[in-house]
Image (cartoon, rainbow, N blue to C red):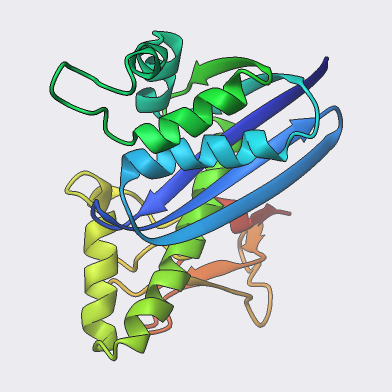
Length: 230
């Protein structure tokens, strides 16, 4: 059987709300990325949807290592709770139907076509592929949610605060600005990359090939990734 690795992460506004998923598939030395957006859904439904969509991409039976920070998916599959529900006609109890049983049914059908090993990884803990998915999903959800809300003619400044305040909790507000589209510490506007007009190397052993800047209040952030030692 061919061996495949699948990684994912997502970004969303309050639950329920718009969600954007980004997934990476690796096979030998090849890599493929796909993503999709749903304007109004829940976190649990999207955590199931991404796994279904990626397994559907496989054209033959494969040995799959699936990495996710969704304990919801991993636990319900690994502990066979979903299989038990299916055997009971998707009844979680004698009176209650299992939530999202339509997606659980689809996922089980895809899982049984392959040999799937589910791996839980801690989110935002330096896992290369997980961080890559998170970065791309964050960028897409911000841009696309902006378009959706802009069509509704919501004030742009109110929209910025709305988007970014839902992204940042009290602990995240202390995170340093190190990447594009993170919020400016002063006005909440997403920062962008900027290239210096000339290298400033006077009395220095380094220069910056790029820095981050706020297009609104013009605050600049000099980041380690842009630093070049001479």
